[in-house]
Length: 99
Length: 410
Image 1 (cartoon, helix red, strand yellow):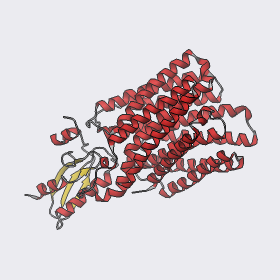
Image 2 (spheres, rainbow over the protein chains, first blue to last red; image 1 turned 90 degrees about the vertical axis):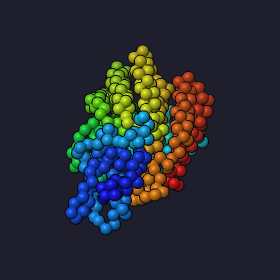
Image 3 (cartoon, helix red, strand yellow; image 1 turned 120 degrees about the vertical axis):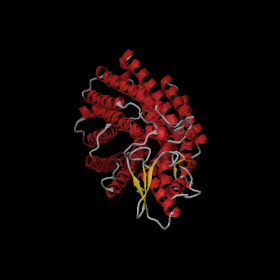
Image 4 (cartoon, helix red, strand yellow; image 1 turned 180 degrees about the vertical axis):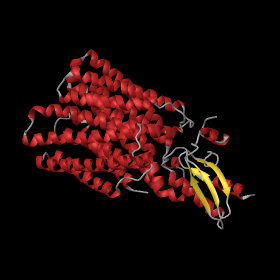
């Protein structure tokens, strides 16, 4: 399994504590880039100024430190492009009662 | 994470429990006896300041950072505000209970000072962030009305002690209540809901035009009503303010339905669902009140009608909305404090695990139903129904608050 896949799997353990859905299925993880000296995870939240900002980003950082203890991993939070519900997986939509 | 919002909210919950404990002991007799007098002042201020305003201030400190994406101007000032306001409030309540004018005067100054510190702190935060939209403008206007409510209350207190403006007293009384109820609570609840409802419904792409129109109408209603009371314009001046307010409430309800329509989460939680029901019922009550005022303008001078209107607005809408939002706010604050650093680790609960939704749903339904009994008692002039309904209302309210309190044991 490559690093991006490992990271993505690890991030499936990080839940939005209000919605109860993991950040990958919510479509919050935009990109995982392998750079020479680090791995960069670019993600967003469902709304700018999400009150769970610190909790979710902190949980992602901790999860990645545990998964890749020997490689620096940066979690970068971006607001553009804005998150939209169509980024959610079918599993997330089902969990939120849309389907 | 700052503990400041949590301390305000816990104090507000204690204020709520105190209010209902006192109401139970008096069988809501203070309401039936009228609110003009030390006992009425005690209960009314315990309810609006000790419960609703205390919790609203905590929510404000919590949400303003979320809305503006910045820290509060000064947390130290926030703690000073808490100390001054809380000491002032409980001193003021004791002053009312003992009927000691000097005590009332001293502690009322502290309450006003607390309000001014709050206004300074949040004002500096908002002007510093300079992010103006329907949410922040509503919140800023709400705080301005809170200051005006405090100032008119202070003027009434000064007049009691010194008799400087006896001719103005009745006018100030009307403006004081209208500014606090319509201006402070009305704009705060509606303004914050523009952020909270989309968040909990996970709503995206909803239209926002009405979100801009509602605060304009709501402010117009707050100002027109205050001016009507200050000018002693009577029914001819109050009724247009009531009509503007009813239009604002109806428009607000259309907007929150637009948000709901664009939701991507089926169940936003019992509290948010009940806030929607409460808002719709409030819109119906506002339309009925307006029709009644147009058909019976003389009723606007009738004490019992005004008591009923106050009962519908404050416990029926303001307090019920706060109870509904507390369903989200209390678990959020506790979860962030206790579990925020453990997020993502196995065994960490979700917020929804902190509060039993079925019980909350049943108790919010019970509060909503029980609210109508004293309302019917006031409408029909049946004191036993006010008393019996008041007992039930207080009992189920306390049960719901106890359920919220259990969150702190999780």
